[in-house]
Image (spheres, one colour):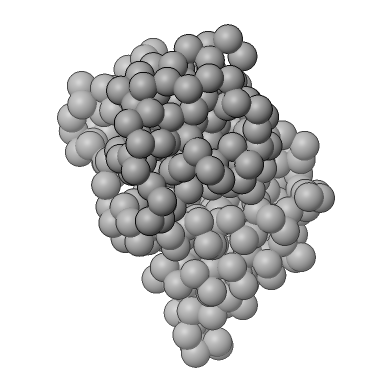
Length: 349
């Protein structure tokens, strides 16, 4: 698929936009006062592959989070700030890699200029984050409701406040909890600016529905070449956001450096506990970095044929099963040995 052309922006040791990879983000949900817990969660996210980590800076004390987290992980860090421009300046001084703030909410031009100048001096980008609940009264009155057009107008308004002071290392997010609104807003923004776009469905919900809404919203935009960095927002552990985001990228072919699992939905021919087996395979593959397709199929009649494009696979039988490779049967093994034998073959690839 052809990617939308966007400005390429450096964020710490990574890039967003242009020809760079689509980065996966998440956000700490530990209270800002808990430095030890925040560091531990940041390390967990980094270990899971999270490529950008954001955390709230609600007050001056929270600035003390930056140094210990930077020392703990080699991942770009984003300070999430609302209203108080002094916190943005403090985060810049402490070595933050990116600021999330809306210039229109921090006061007069002198404050906007102070933040823009400080970020520009240290090559720190700013993410403008607009959602359906953050629109300016004038824009909301003009459009009558938080329409996609209203949210894009708001985002570009905030961008112009920075552009006025010769600052354009900007990333834009325009999130909504309504998937259709979110999709339409990002489509409009993609045609009206060249800034990198941070995709996400805000307030998406708990794990099950949150992943579904995010997959539809984020995935549909990415398949059209729109989007430069993503966050799956879940009312759950942040590490689950990272796993879900990578799964979305895998599903549409934008992540090819790890296993891709396919498994059948089972039917009346299935004589093996395939549900449990597939989950075990998925878990065993979590840390595998091989770009391979792995199949877990329910029966030896159709399994190898339906999944003949898989690099390696197993098909269940009655007390036993088959190991197959590219549709060719390698051998029959006892059911209790299927998982281990599969992993042995994967190790050989």
